[in-house]
Length: 268
Image (cartoon, rainbow, N blue to C red; front, side, top):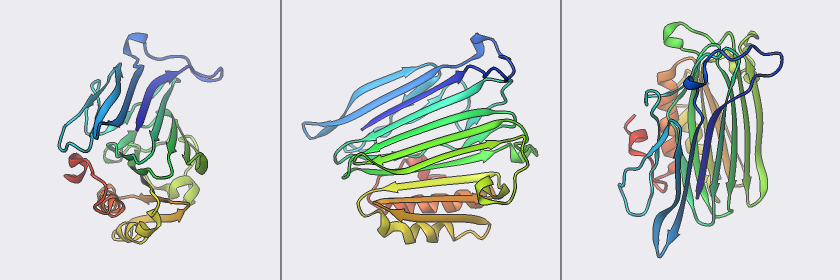
């Protein structure tokens, strides 16, 4: 199993404003982690930390490695993407699970501030007999402060391959300058979003439980589908508490008692 995570500012395009912060206040951070089973035990085979990112690694069981990603430049309750004067924040995540590996990627919630400029690139490569549980929550604007995402840019690119075959591809771009409609393609105008991906040979058998979990909250709009050993679900809401409850229930349904989840996640 291998994880690569980079976060760095991209140079502004020619038609964008110039830099608004000095270099001393900018962050170029990288994390890299590789795990392998050797002599019957899981061991770290590669660990690299640079910039403001660090791993914290509690050892709760000898047959699983849990890595908590910490941004030491800010708080740990949520990942925040702050306002930009022109530069694009670029985040690149590369996840790879080889034969027989099980990978859970369950980060803390990300809050995208008004005026933020964010580009994320997810690349996920799985062996046919590996397992993946990925779940994340996003908040678009600081809703509790009355802030809406009326300026800025958020771009997402997802690619997931199982056994070398592309099974999921998504491109998304939301501009804060444009009015958001109630169309699902514009997130139905909702400020809170959750995404869940389950990949395993019998993933489709857990689809009903995932749908039931997301359907347990009347203020949550959700859809889930299954194909080629993959379950993909997305949920939207105007109520963050309701969405979080439904999301955590869906994560538990996806895990099904077989996948070991972070203790911090389960305490939420």
